[in-house]
Image (cartoon, rainbow, N blue to C red; front, side, top):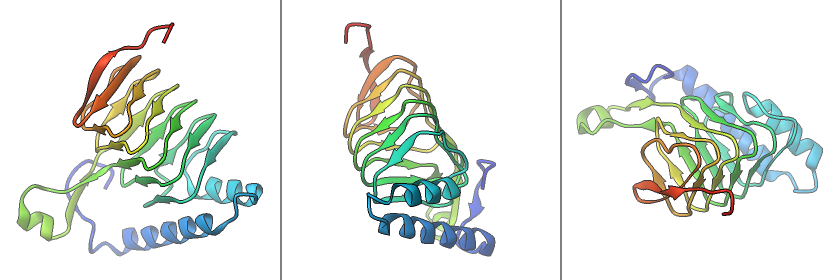
Length: 182
């Protein structure tokens, strides 16, 4: 699963068991009241592979395994964050994610026979420091978003985005560099 090669995701009981455990934990997290800050924090620290000291993830939240996700300091994710973490997903410090965003490490072959046979691949996603991701953004397998960049709402990020830029669109592309006075 972590190699980037094709694997059978539909018939691996170890993966399916881990997936079920994670989805149960996400369900538990999403049932907690917002005022249950300590319980929410503790459950998220159990679920994710690494967290900074300070973070906030607003419900609902869904991920596939949890242990492949690393979030840095001062991480904030608004409602309806989905992370399909079949491969590693790493967020730096001071990352802000607007509502309805998705990070997909899993992909499927174009060949219908292999796809229908349950084959898939997974490629890691990396988000640098000081990144703002607007609402309804999808980040696809294998993408790196550079530090100090902004991804405009509604973008579909299919390729790497460099440091210090405003990027937007479907597919997402660099619009311009971000300057000190912006």
